[in-house]
Structure formats: C-alpha cells, structure tokens
Image (tube, rainbow, N blue to C red; front, side):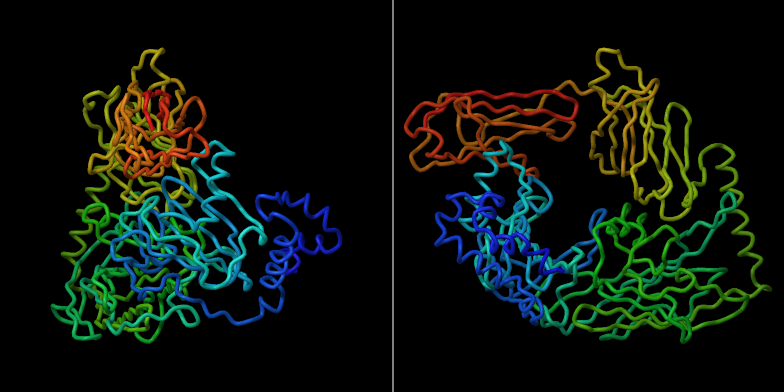
Length: 618
C-alpha cells in the first residue's frame, strides 16, 4: 500500500504516457523532452520500490565536517521541545549540506521566521529528513523556488513536490548551512521524522553516534509539596538542596535525608555536556525509584508536534520566568499529555505515612548512555513532631483564604473552563488550557504613557496557557480610533506584543497564549522603512547586485509587505529577526544600466500603511 501511494502517478504513466504527462503538469522547462523525463521516472521507481523500502538504511552525515552539536534533541525551548539537533558550522555560513539518504525533495519552505529556508527530503523507508535555517538551496532547487515565488508574488513559500521533481541520491548537495529564520547564529538544524512525521532523536543506534564519555550533572534537587487553596491541592516549591558530584555518583551536599511534611515530588536542575563541545545539553532519560519501585521515568526519544507545547508543564515555569532556569519536574501534572513519560505511578508523587522513611534513587542518562545517579533518604515528619509544621501550614492557608476573600486570588481548576472579571478586565480560560489547578491573581497598575487603559498584570499563574485564552480590557477610545486600538501583552522584561483585537462593547478583546500585563494602546504610526545600502537618486556600482531596507514597526509585527521595481512586483527576501528586506537585481527581469523606480509598502497589525519610493540607477 505504501508503495502504491508513493508512486501511483508513475504506475498511471506506465499505462498511458501522455495522460500522465498532462496530469502532472510537467513542462519542457523541467524535463526538456522524454529523453530526460524517462530517466527521472526510472530513478523515482527505483527509489520507492518495495525492495528499496525493505533495505536497511545507513544515514550519512548531513555535512562533511566532524559532527559536533550545539543543541540536542528534546531540549526545552520557548513553548516547544527542540525537534532535532543543531550541527555546528564554526560560526560561518555556506557549509555544503548533503542528503543523508536517497529519496526526493518532498517539500520546500521559505519564510522569515521558524526554519527560514528549509528542505524536507522523503526517503524510501518512510522517514523524512529536514534541513533548516539554510543560507540558500542548491542551484536547481533555488531556481525552482525562485520561479514559484514570482509566480505567487510572495516571498513566503510552502510547496509540496512529487518524486519526479528532485530525486536525490545519498550525498547529493541540497543546500548550504546558514542563519535564516528564527536562528541566533549559523548552524544546521537537522531532523529525522518517522512515517507519522514525528521527530526522532537521531543520536541513536542505526543513525548517528557521537563520541561522549561525560555523564550528566545535577546541580540542585528541588522538593515540592502541596498547599490547599479553596479545596484544591496546588504544587508549591518547598526546598532547594545543593548536590555534589564525584564522576557519575551524586549526593546531597548537606546530609543524606530530606525531611518532608506530607506528599511531595521532586525536580532536578540538571544538564549534560559532550566531549569536544562547550555547550550544555538536555538530559535524554530520567528514572526515579521509591525503594525498589519505579514511580517515574521519561525518555526523550520521540514526540509529536501536536504535544510539544506541553513542555511548559515539564518544567517549573516560575523558575524559568524569574531566573531563566529549566528545572525538570519529576511529576506529571494532570493536564500534561506529553508522550515522553514511560512509567509513572501516582503522577510521580511520594506519599509516606507519618514517620516513614524511604529510599529515593534518581538516575539520569544522556544520549550516549552515560549515567549519573543520585540517592538519598526521604522521611515524613512524625505525628508527635508536627506542631510547628501544622502552625506554618495553618498560617499559609489563612493567608490564602484572606487573599481569596479580598479578591486577590482565585483558584482556576485545570479540568474545566474558568472565568475572571473585575475592574474593567476579564479573562476566559477554556477547558484544556491549564495543566494543573492554579491560583489566579491579577494586579492592577496605573496606565502607562501612551496607553488608553490601565494595565492588568496576571501575576499568577506563571505557566503560559496551553490554549489561547480570551482577554478583555475596557478602554475609553473614541469611535473613530477603535480600529487602531490593540490589546497589548507586555512581559516582565518590558517586551510588548500587539494582539489581533476586536471591539465588543465595552471590551477590547484578543486571544493570548501568554500571561503578562495587558492594556489597550492606540497605534496610528505606520511602519518605518529605511534604505540601508543605497539612497534616493543614487547609482549602484557595477558589482552591487543587492539592495536592502529595514522595516520596523513601533508596536506590532509587519502583517504584510510588497516591493515593486518599475511597477512590477519584485521579490524582497525578509529576515524578521534583523528587520531586513533584500532585493537581488535580476537582469532577466529588469534592464541593467538604466534608471529604475523602487516602491516598497508595508502594513502593520493595526492596518497602518508605510511606504517608501525612490529612483535608483543600476
């Protein structure tokens, strides 16, 4: 069946050449004539025959230089798990990238963010290899993509291809490593996906093996307990204990026993290092035993893109927000649907009887199998010694009750939809947006300079919602400016994000997948467009084949843009992180050695239009 699905068009061709030719829209520009077309068909048949699919695959490296990583599979990133590995290129763009196995280019993507310039190569065994942040594609692929962009009058490209378009052999050059899209420096982002398009950890037997003899490290042990607020047990950080390490043996720095008062779970401040790399990496596996019983384990081996945002429940997000720390919780929140967990009992919670003592053993392992083990005792406070503990717990609950009565806190339950409305601010949280029940706290702040409303900061929870929540903010905005009013979300560092906004009397409403300070701001300022390497009325040198503009908005992102040369649409390549728009002069489309009129227009989220016009000789 797989064979038939992959080459059904080729089978059709064997019955009727001319019908197949027309159905596939294969034009002379692609194959020239049947003498070129038939070998392509033969190559595709060979690639996707059932015999090819049954063969074992030995994936070649995607680059010729020594394989060294700057990031590994499954690392926690903002709102997602890293779905591949990042190969180092020495900080320089242009390293050739090769197909790791025979197949064909199944998808070409060009965008200003995300993976930037990316290629997806389908292989006979059902896997797909992905190459992201490329500087550029190989010439034939680049030429095809370029024509598609002009045909679509759009820099953005997401095209699926047939096995006949770009069949590949292992080791064929397909592009060059770069820094396109949401990349912080030159590297190759590489993925291997299974038949269901789930990303796989490529540092594994049968794919890639990297030399590494360094075991993971654990710097601190976090202990969490549960406090009760409005009848809900809410996880709270209780203790932070230093860990010392001798080779692969870990121990608590201050004694070997942790005292607890009630049910608890643990978190680890841990990381891994590899031989020959100064970077830190995520830990592949973790297993926690209570006495001799395995009660928690995960393996960062494979996951689906649909679940990757659940990584926000894998970590202690309050530590991430405050200190940019990634503390892995050895606990599965009730609304956490990550599939990396292998064996979990009671969500990873340790619940001991009064006065009971138990042995805890935590083993952490990296991609190479190097393992470190932390062992300690946990002891529950005896009933006769819990007077002080009870007093402290009572004080905490009394404070929680007082805050709740004053309207400062409210419990949002993970298993249902929740709502909040007070003082001109409202929030609707749909079911499935929370990973666990949480205190919800809103702090009112004075109106900021230039804003049309007070600011309402969601102080709790720290963890971003899994699904979009609806935010409503009251603001006194004149009717003629309402279409320019935007709900803005500002994080703790002061970074503002303008949200797509609708006015629904008396609230300005928007959907958000982040918490922060929310307020309404009126945006009437258009994007600012500034030439970088040329000037109006100027003349380009003979060797200058590219012009660049910066396009920035005071508040929101650029929603749309277009560039024109002599009234004809022109391809301006957009790099969102640097705000740069680049146009490469194409002698096949414009006359060289003549005066040209350049027009560039950009629109922001509020609908403000910015424009730039100049005359330029090239």
